[in-house]
Image (cartoon, rainbow, N blue to C red; front, side, top):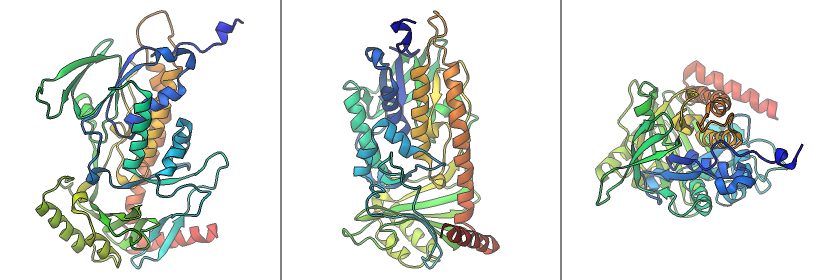
Amino acid sequence: MSTADNSPRKPLIAGKNVIIVGCGIAGLAFPLALRKQWPEEYIDEFPNVAIYERDCRETHPGREGYSISIRGDNMGSGIQTLHKMGLLERMLQVSITGTSKSESKGKFTLWDLDWQPLLSIAGPKTDDDLPATSMRIRRDALRQVMIDALEALLPEGSIHWETTCTKVEPQPSKVKVTVGRNNAVDSSDVEIECDILIVADGAGSKIRTQLRPEDRLSFRGIVCLAGVARFPEGEVPKPMDRNWGGVLGAGPLGLFVSPVDARSALWNLSYRADQPRQRLSAPLSDDQANELLHEALDRAKPFKEPTQTLIKATDPATMAVYNAMDKQPFSHDANSKVIFIGDSNHAMSPFAGNGANMALMDAWDLALQLSKSMPTSSSSSLDLGPALKAYDEMSIPRSSKAINMSHWSISVLHSAGITFWAYKIFFAIIRLIKG
């Protein structure tokens, strides 16, 4: 066999025009993962990538000032994915928890109403191949590392900030995308054609609504009030200065807390409801923020201190109201040139604790399939069918499992009566087993 036969074959999407809508975790991770897996022999034919994001590069503190878990267990492999992308070390430097080889900086914990631990989980065992096996990190810090890496990778101007995708029209061989600049003097929309459109515009995806109007979010019977409390450095109340997790025992009420940094902590007060509530997020008026703050203080009365102290210290700019919504994933049509990844395909409520991990894994696996997919004939048509099938077979089972697990988490956090005591016994047994 000749040397040429052993060399990497040109990927099917070499030189193609790829548009990504959304600059969240999935949208940022995909081009980084694609570049990492692209055959160096054909680097000059790396796809032409353009990203369109409706928001500006600098995010409002009310939108991004919270922390998320990046996992390395059998429920999510975000840690391993970041490691493969070459970003894990940089992420750990700006994370809350640091590395597993350093002093422990916190655990996922479930507490009772007296803030007594029912269960604490330190995370997976140390892996010699990884500097950490789990991580708690501010979402804006994670996103910033990825933006910096992407701006160093792509040609200048590849990311179009404050630009909204208003319409998508799949064509026989192309995808027509209409975009418009937000608040621009010339507000006329522009039509652009691409070979592949990657949809990563989140749970409330406007593109999914347009192309798949029947594929809607489902309300899971939970409304959340949330905010970030600010304190002098080092004075965040215990135990949310180090640990994160939920407080059980208040029946239809649930409370989740998490450190954000040395000066702040997140709280999320959730309650059962028959109907979803109007979503509110920054920027809020002073009256709206004060009204929500008083409501949260009233609803949180069953939870003992430092709950009231935490809520009273809330930065009004971070107050929000949202509903627990999710959506099961769908399979792509073999002829599709429009690919949905992350929450745009399988929306997850915060109770999944896994949305960022699924987004990272989606980005890596789709990039894997597209970078190794080769033309099947001399035809110039772009046959993504085999790559999409392989990607769906990887993405759908894990995201379905994560969504179903989130329903169990909702049940645990809002349990009462016999159900609550059954969970307490269950957690006590786990503690005994773990020693």
